[in-house]
Image (cartoon, rainbow, N blue to C red; front, side, top):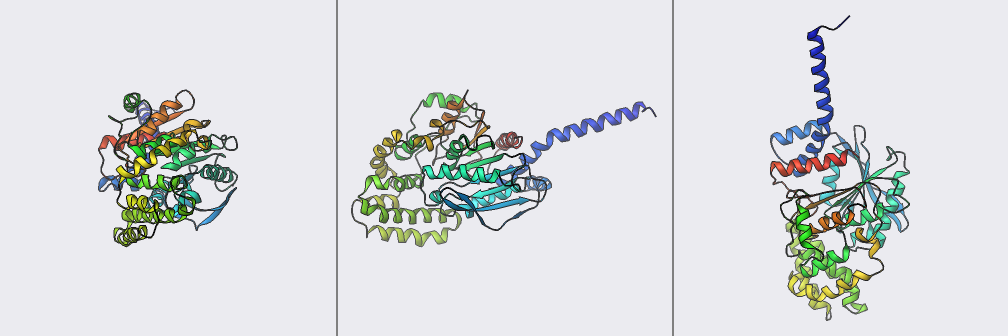
Length: 403
């Protein structure tokens, strides 16, 4: 029976409404994810909960790599998995149990992703080494071969902090380049030697004027270059200890720095527990011989101005180290998969200019999208944000969710 004029109009409205819903749904999912990640209250939280999917957290297991098995955990959404993401934390003792990593994995699982978190042993020891890049490569290859994790045979990679840059390097390697759906660097670096130069001097190598001009394209009205955080400098000393103290002092100095970094992590999650650990680190320095005692005192006193000049020439010498191509995206073969770069505009651990310079370097070499956000500090979403910043971040994640 032919449709009446009114029936045709109604059908058109239904089709338009359906099309709008189909087009708007990715935005709603991305926006819901950002609202949950930022822990925004009130009506926003209610709206985000509407699209949130239940999920379960599997028991810890291990993933095989060339360096041995590594700890892993899978966050399994109840509804159909968009695809599996491998998420790697930065330098942190807690590895897959780091609270912010767990929170982000849960928020992504609630958005419909299967999230496989892995921990590279060297990163848990605060070490940034080629072995970490190898571990990421091996974990992606393994996951892509497991029927329960692959959807179309490709895996998304999300690297946080220093693992962000290392993930981009791994994603470009021949063994997995065809198995990567996308790679995202969350507060990561473009060149490790340049990042270490910043951590030791507070200065950025490269064309800063070009970076400032490019920052507008990445959604920011400025590119932040602030005095470096003492945490990042302590990590730098740990990685360079064998170059600044005698061989028999490397182990004891590394233990002291490790204790300080543990206390710094606790200061974020459990300030009361951090106090005695900080005090123990200060007492420990007195038992060290020189020059380790002085360096440990600089760490405990957060004396960036004193420790930085000592480490600066040593860090700069790394620029020609043969391991740099395995540690720096700007020195490695870029992935064929899309690259997403997200950075807090005022980050003072890895400065946001690293993302700007990396995006410039990748132009014409790879598919890259970047965003500098005031909603991000260092690899963490903040609760305070303008509606514009929330929307920009939601658009950025919408583009990732399309991959």
